[in-house]
Image (cartoon, rainbow, N blue to C red; front, side, top):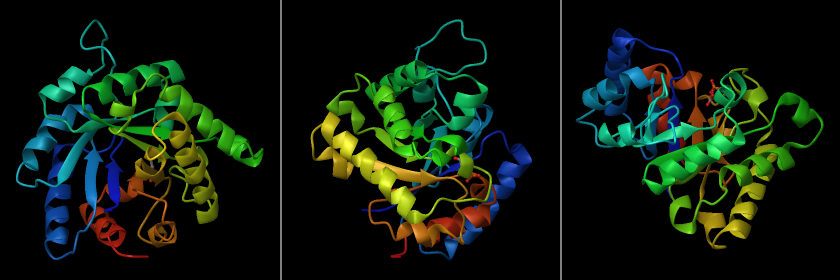
Length: 255
Ligand code: PGA
């Protein structure tokens, strides 16, 4: 099974940065052996533009960073899942810790977003992860599994196939600090176990579970050794075209 690597551009980049990314990225992948599925989650204002400039690259999947669960309505500043479908956006990140912490996205809203996206065949990257304090108190597993269960409430067997789970310990995001691979292994194991309890038991194996938090070209190989990992959600190391291409190449190699 090919690994999946998704870049998250957050609130970075302007038009000229995007053009530079594109040329650096294309130059780098031209001579590289890319054996992963990949995509980027771009700021909503550039979704159509990025889809357009990558129209000749059939492999790159363009994601939003969040989407509203309502089809339309008086929700100033939001974009709806219907608008994503209209613009051929492939899917969206949902429940990123920055949204949970800074924009008060609750478990209930995250659940509604997951339901709306997955029912409409949009790929959903559902982020879960514990704070540093929760990690230090050794309650990571229960925090993550609780977030997961709440986010997947009422999501049916048929729709859960559109959901990719991203385990992102909050203390590892943007800090350069990463958990030990065996700690990530344990959480992924619990996530898979929970999915097989909630759904068709076979889904525990087949569901995609990514790791995110300070992944870069230096540490990706340590995580690739975990055979239960399906790929990565990458912030800073996805901003430069050549860095991202390098990660894609490394991610497709056997650890
Ligand atoms: P990072 O971000 O790779 O810069 O730590 C990851 C994320 O926020 O998804």
